[in-house]
Image (cartoon, rainbow, N blue to C red):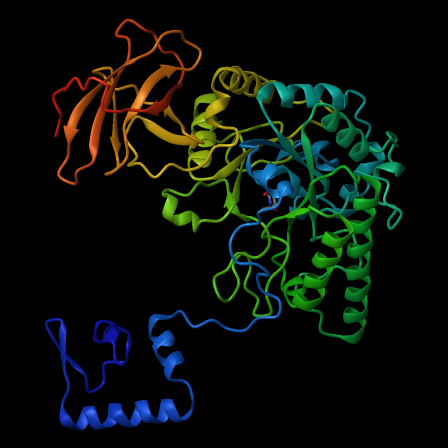
Length: 510
Ligand code: FHN
């Protein structure tokens, strides 16, 4: 059957459109019938229609291995975290974005690639790495007070330096003056605070002689890359063996052609890692499918457990999220992950960050805030202040963050909705000047029975603003006129209105 509404996708030759209806000449009709019988003879009648809508599925061996979300307990736990902490720490914290008094404007952890520095000197920095102020217990306590439910720690960034005593290279913490296993200290301290640990691991490794960004061409380079693959695999198993408490691996630097060309091998590695560590959570930055598609495979399905594309960015609408799990990783200045002693771009304040956290959670995402400790092991005062302010907000309002999900009510200018079970949370960032917080309840759903502000006593008046033309119910939640709000606040709605609730009508503003 020809679906005339879809003709716009069929090449227009010989097919003229009049208004919405195609008018087909006899000659064209003959050609079309011939084409269709040919397609039927080839047994691809259906695929023609599918192609026309662009929805034809391609058989893949190394694409997504599941459609839809993971439903097991480990993934559910991850999904409910709401807020996480990222820590980028390595030898790049020593120069802190400067070399010989010169300022490096890029991300501090990338300074090794800057032409302004001798690479040998960078590769010897580890001999000075002695973070005597490092106190993992203090970091973990600060993260806990901030409200983080999980953390991601850089075991190895692109420079290849290992923060654990890997037996597969000498370029590790064991050979620094500090000597002690930093990954272990972190894993133990955070686990003790009840914070789940995920390990960041960069596939890019500028220190390994077999590493290549482009596809290796000569036999010698191919052999070296094979060694690099074995090395990478060994290190990953080593991490799982040494730190069995960890919940996930957060991969990065997997965009190289050389790595993407290895789809079957990487896919098998992922399966083996999961078998070794049941429940392991891995995001979409680990591997590409056999066609080189990353994050989403050739059929548009998410690769692995959650979408890792939201780096320093948030989706501007729920539709952009494609109904998958996702995280947003965010820096405090514009693009600094490792310690840079001189932040020259806009530095976010706690208001910005709290809003981003709420926004992410209102669209089913986890929000992960990055910290870059200095070369001695101190978290900088600006980050400490932010952690404290976010924590103060979380102490009162975390019900609007932990374990919540998206609510499909029309977003209003005052802020964001989240929901957990029957409870609905309104995180208000822009307080309406008439002190009425408007909600529009979809057709067929009951309005809220009670409303209260988290951290305050008493309930708020709810009045009806009637119905709009779409038969949705409008309600106004009245804020106490004399209340002073110095921070964003959360209104919790509970219960459902029934016929015994007196509807006091308010003037609907259109
Ligand atoms: O190049 C890295 C960067 O240094 C940082 O680690 C971020 C964190 O998501 N990831 C890479 C860029 O996407």
